[in-house]
Length: 247
Image (cartoon, rainbow, N blue to C red; front, top):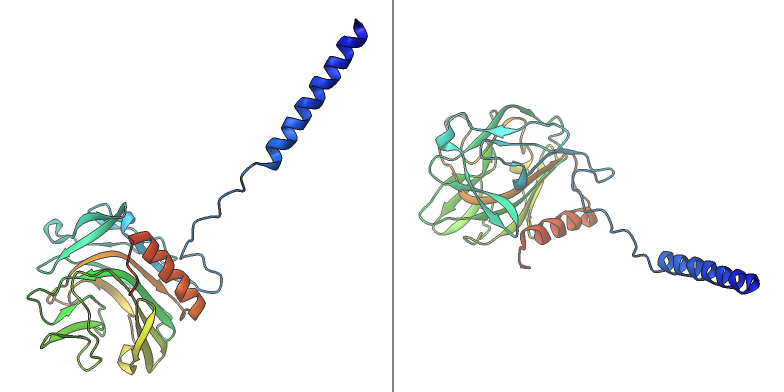
């Protein structure tokens, strides 16, 4: 009887060890970490404003500068909506702006700004997506139905109410390039000084004129130009996050 009990105990122990081994063998692999655009090796991220960081008052910065955007006038702050489960800022094109007076970027020659954005051009002309205190760059113009990045830099047709990923680069002190949906359209020396000091989203920094009607999901500023492979990574991240259709 003791022998039978001993045999049963040994058998049960073997079964337990076998089951434990099988559980380990079929344990699903750990999920890959989510892509983080601010931690790409070799591509320092000065600023990262994802829409989910906006609380209706302040747009918190997850980049290295840590400078947040806001508007002291509560009635001139953008509202929000949701796209694919993520918060998106809605600028009305009348008086909605966000700014940071202390913002700075010390790497102007070799900078890249990336946005997930949809513009509403209905009835609007001479509108600015953003500007800085010194040069008031990056102005979007509408002339006879054609969109321009600053006067004379274009033309580049930008459809209304269509989500897209836009990249602006400053590769040297006298050269830059524009990409929409990961396709380069043209380069221009006038784009070189992207931003230097102070930043305003929508409108002119000095007087808030020429605000832009748009939905803005995310803004990322790198202190270097992105390689083709990394630019594609960031593009894929934004298109997946905001369900941006392929061009």
